[in-house]
Image 1: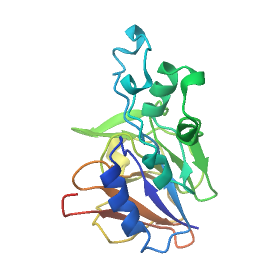
Image 2 (image 1 turned 45 degrees about the vertical axis):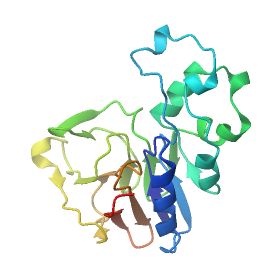
Image 3 (image 1 turned 30 degrees about the vertical axis):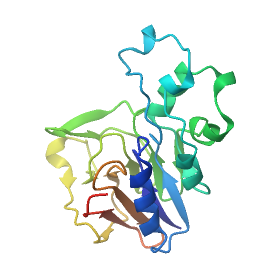
Length: 217
């Protein structure tokens, strides 16, 4: 299978449109969305004190976000988790359920795809770059979002210490081959922002190609 992987949209319809327009030219079989499609207006610090009155106070009502992802395989992010905790189930609009009720992971023989917020193994590889170093997964790679960075790390065969982890250089538009004797952590950059990012994963060829729109959207 050949997937286009997008993540961390955070309500940015323009960014998602721009990414999907380019994905349509890349001959992928399916889009995989790693969550945070919506943007929750209530911060995690205020969630315990929030009293629900209207759904618009929690997140913007924009069905186009879900329409654009029609046919995609979606997993749930931390924004969706927070929205589900704040909005009574009876008030959830039908159009939003495909995202809010999505599973936390999608697993293929080649890789695990998840948002990453539920992993309990984050370490700061370098200032501002967090990585789920001790995450357990099957297959060759763990694809995740959550920290809004483009990064690829090759894990060591033995104990996972940063001294043994290889940071693989990424160049947009250039494929990286994932060796069969190693496991990798792949942080897919956000679709939100002036330079939306995504990745194309070719499981048959065992490659990942990062992309980013350089012209501000």
